[in-house]
Every structure is written in C-alpha cells, then in structure tokens.
Amino acid sequence: ESLVIADWPLAEPARADAAAEQAVRELQQVVTEVRRFRSDQGVKPSYRLPAEVTGPVPAADVRALCRLAEPGPDFAVTATVQVTADVSVAFDLSGAIDVAAERARLSKDRAAAEKERTVNAGKLGNTAFTDKAPDAVVAKVRERLAAAEGDLARIDAALAALDGAST
Image 1 (cartoon, one colour):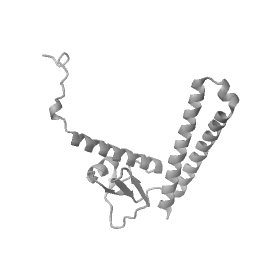
Image 2 (cartoon, helix red, strand yellow):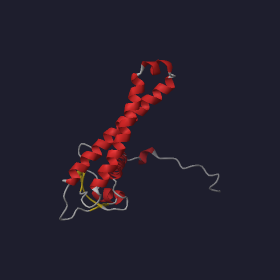
Image 3 (tube, helix red, strand yellow):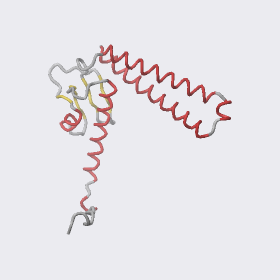
Image 4 (cartoon, helix red, strand yellow):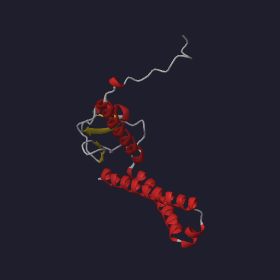
C-alpha cells in the first residue's frame, strides 16, 4: 500500500516515559534561558562561551546545544543564570564581549523602553483618553506598557550582569 494513503501511526500510551519527558522539558528550559542570556549579553552565537553547569541536567548536552566551552583553569565566574532552584549556569564573559559597547547599547535600549513606558503610562493616566478611547485601544496601550516594563526589567538585569563582568 502507498504511504500517501496509509494511516498515521498511533502512539502507544504504555510506552510513554514520564521521567524522560520531564528530563527533556528541564533540558529545554536550561537551553532556552542560556540562549536568552547569551542574546541579552550580546555574545555572538558562534563564540564558545566558557560555562559551568550545575544541577541535575546533563552538562555535556547543555554545552553542545548552547555552544558553551568547558571551563578551563583560568575560569572566573562573571555572571550566573539561575534557571531553577537546583540548576544554574555560571559564565566567564571576559573576552567574550566589549563591556563598554554593550553597556552603551543596553543604555540606548533602556532609554527607548523608558520612553515607551512613560508615553503609555501617560495615556493611561489621562482620563480623557481612557474614557473616550475604545476598550480595544486602551487594552493595547496596557499591553504596550506591560511590554515596556518587561523590557526594562530584562535590560536592568543585563546591565547588572555587565557590572559583574567588568569587575
């Protein structure tokens, strides 16, 4: 029979492995947070950043999926990402980024996010706007305000991590 008309294979619930699924979810969470950190810090994707992985996740898999290098003898922790209560990743950012240039870029991004927050908070604080604008428009302004506040928190965390990297 042709594959084009064959039935799709069905999953066998008896073969499900809840522990393996949980381990993969934890690994995905670690990889997501490490990649987000690298991006926030402006580390080039091709750069093998030295890192130390602690916790019940396979460190070799995290290093392979996140392009991390094994910590060497001169490894100095300059930033740490706490992924879960028992999983953390420590990084050595020395030599990975131009701290002054990254701080300048983040400061520019912070100013833009601060302006966005001020504009949207001003609109929501104006009763003439909130009374006359359609509910959908007011909801959109609230979403923009929340996004700007989230951006500010992320940028402030990245700047704090940079302060640790420059010492």
